[in-house]
Length: 349
Figure 1 (spheres, rainbow, N blue to C red):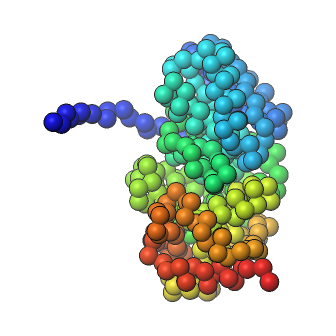
Figure 2: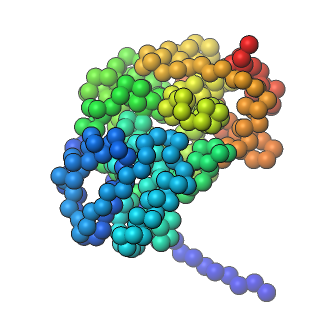
Figure 3: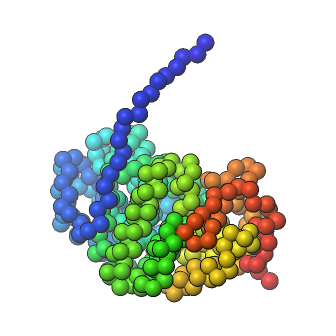
């Protein structure tokens, strides 16, 4: 005997991304702002001056990728229970990618799902992490292996927040912007080669272009069953590097930078990218003081760690490989020897 359950999914999870000065925000419900001490000291007042709500609470979690874990997530949830948040309540993520990912994940599981708003304060989170509804935390096995797709109610990208951004954080965001261009837009990449993003007007153009690209991809493939996986260009290598260094040596965008160079080396070895194109990508990354190399201590263990990647299966590793500049291939058909030959270039002597 079988019983069918027919479900009609009529919920529209569309939302707007505003790239401008943060507007006044008015909520007729309880609101919790999730942030960290550094961002709170710099930008909390700026948000509070523009926020009206029935009740406002501040939830502060430690700063850094190493705190993107169960303990921090549970501390957010406990505060929500303490203040009797309900399904109409709203969370606001004020911070970078770590804050956004954890806040979104908390929102996705608190009472089976409440609304949240993204107010990203780093370049990386503005051009990438805040858009698309990926939420999650890390564990000892890797990055973002526990999480959910939960779209925000809205995203507010205010360039004002970038005025206090340290140079390394800025470069990390540029790496993700370059990632968008290499995979989807050759003209955008060529524009970046001749325009310094440290100039405000150029930066605004780059943010808008990157967000438009990410939004288009997400609208085509919200749950990353195909095209959206291309946005993980460089990340298959990056996540292993981050895990090996316990998220303390590199910022995420810095590890992405190294991962893109490794992915390009693989593409060159497969004949899908020219050496000149790979050099141009590396040169652009390095022009923003981004790292482009990493010393692999053990090639075998590095390769085995690929199988913990969310895109991989028990028997095959999925790689995002550029096809020249402006094109991309998502494949699990690259043989082990070809990959290890690239890794050996980075092996410790």
